[in-house]
Length: 526
Image 1 (cartoon, rainbow, N blue to C red):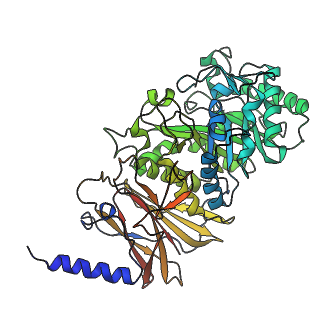
Image 2 (image 1 turned 120 degrees about the vertical axis):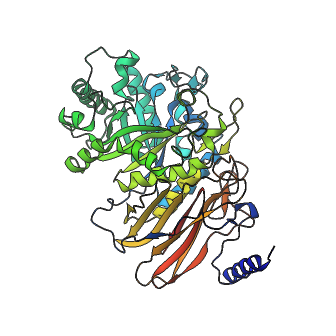
Image 3 (image 1 turned 60 degrees about the vertical axis):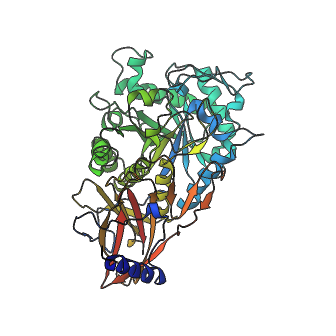
């Protein structure tokens, strides 16, 4: 066997290190095999934001939603704040320039009751995922909300059962803890398109009846709470199953949802079914699949953006699951938290960002497997940072804290590649590349080579990497920009030995070359 190729590779590596261009990874995270026999991908992002780039991205874009019954687990209380969750939220807010907007709600909030004399925050104890469980909240349920400094909140007021006492009690307790200055919005109910199925409305309930009920109830509640006379409600909150049921943004707007002048935003709920066992490459690890799921909402998005541009449009409860059973029961299925979910999260958020969505609230719950983190010990679940959190970090750093940031997808005609260009003050600032080629930690890790047309005057690019040393199906060894986050670090960034925060890559003849390993993502800063 000739030693010449090895010597040449070693010489190149040493030269690159000396030039500051190579990120030294643990051996198992490197790409020793060379390219995957596919040609280099030429990327030509516009040097200035084109006409069809997104609107300015809101700093709250990569936000979260908390299943109602899980709120105390994530926030803690006055005497025992959950600093682990608090630090994880702060890590995202510091990157985006904040504040994030956290929605508290769901089916078990919509059907909940309020007891002002109850000492416990919530009764009875949650069973499994608790989605359809009936709960009673007491005043202490809300006392941990102020622990998340700098965060704004949306609270889902019970609406399904039309009980004024419970609606008023919960709304007042929530606002008292949140503070009116930190209240982003109130929602009335959760997924009203499912009310007939759930038994809280009679057949014939539809958009017209919902709008009339919403307007009357919001008028009463605003008066009872003495709320300011400005838009303070988030409407619709339609389920992922709403399509084809005569429920849509258009039907609700045409029925008069804005007649009272109190609606500031609408919310749509969306979950993608990603099979991480038999169909990993065609679902979770596939850019076209991500887009296809989101594109079923295009009629809602385009109608609202074109006809009601002053109304925010949010994906107010979003996530992914491997099976319906995992979505609706307590799930400790390891396949829900594999590293591929970090790449999926990054692509999902960036694609929605490119479409002009104001905010995405990714769902959190103390037992769900697809969440960004588990906040507490619960049965056989331990507190931990899950892989989707790394997708949030990636997207937050892509935004870069800018208040004048826009984004557009850069097409590649390749199902396994996702590329986005980010602009500050309309000038190209960052490029994000996701390589969905599957590598599962065994054998060689191939890579794809990308040649990026750099913006005029750029001499170098700073490259950061999102990776796992064990590949797409790993349940640990997640790294972003040379750091990791864990329960052991109390949700704070920890430098990983052998990893660099970034590498500098030179621009030659107006172009920058970067290699992206299989099951990795990189971000190039100009």
